[in-house]
Image 1: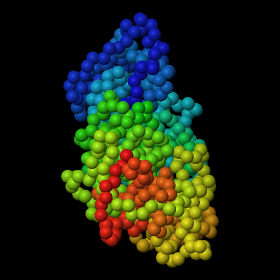
Image 2: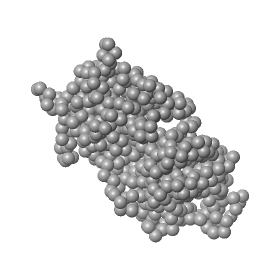
Image 3: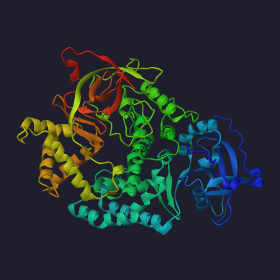
Image 4: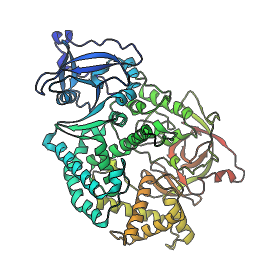
Length: 608
């Protein structure tokens, strides 16, 4: 939940104003909320409202507001009865624009409907967020005033593109979440040559808006049955926006300024996946079966912003279903994440918490290395999503098997076995983070990809500069972590596709030779872009091909941990204990092979 409005002070200085300030009355019932009744009027008239206590049910009639809080030093006032409430200018403008001219608007807006000075009430209302946005008739997503007609131009372009896709693709017409469209070579060329320039000019600036970088909006939008995206006087349905952009994402190379693409990535890495899961669940198509729901939602929203680091957890609780975890704003940040780490170890099987742990990131923290933290930008896509991995043997199906112990000093006691250590490492991660560079231009990225790919290949050459056939095959498999983009074991044809991909890169061809080559290369690109970011290719001391975390150093230990599905890189400490660096892939040890080593025994491993 956004931080308190105690800094909103210029408006409160006079005794007269202080005496007229609104006093909240306590919410008593478990499902009790406040709703803002906004009296009708034009945008120029002062806002006059009432706050009403109601019991939240599916029959409650109201709309919910999703917005970015904005600059808390810029204050406006609204009248609630004959009292006043201070709000940010961003919220004040939003309320003026969504207000009806001739009829009362019943609205839920967090900054007003929740007493921000009462932590106990905030804890209680956070627990109701799922129902609030699910039960609302409509969610109004406010992006801000439409300066320079950015929203109007963007929405016009997107609606025209929606009409264009509908006219050329049966898949687009039939599916809510269209995958690759059946576009001809000419239609692909039209998309690249005519539509992409329009998108860069008219649509991409929309993703520079603050709303697209805010964490709380993810669950607000994902939970909504119907949502309208509003920029000034222009609007478009959220479903339409997602559908058009999703078709673009799967059928076109996208590039542009950094801040716009960060907004794009927040929108799709988190909102599309989470909203899609929720919509499909509601429609009865499938039940989400991931064991790591809130952990993975934290990963998906890792680039989203919130003022209170604890909201990296609490801002996603509304997306979970009866997980037994409640917000507690009285905790410090370190206590919050330490408690969350302990809770998640007990809540999820196979020590999957370690795959999302903060590890040894560039950001110094008192949070244990084995616990998830608020800073996840350095984390790669979790290898535990590979459904064939079982590094410590058959996965533990029962959570009653005690695989760990947490002692009072926040040490995590486990059982493990060192199988190798980091030796030769490619200097840079294979794919750069969007957050590490200023401008994302296609040619620059391709140059970086090709250079690093060839550095990986050079690492496996012998002293004469040659690569044995057997090593070449193992290299092709290892570069893809032996896993498809869907978490399945790769088939032999992936080796053939990767060899062709690598040979074309080595030849510096700008484009693939044939249409089939282009499709194969696109599949390899997608797979590499999933598993490689924030990892570095490595050859271990014993000659195994490996992917290690970007923070890994020479002589770090590669350890199989009892009960975990993937290996981990640990860094020895002077005390004999270890700091967790992160997950790793090591060829030949991903499916229980370590247990066949001569004299294999589990040993105590203590993580700090």
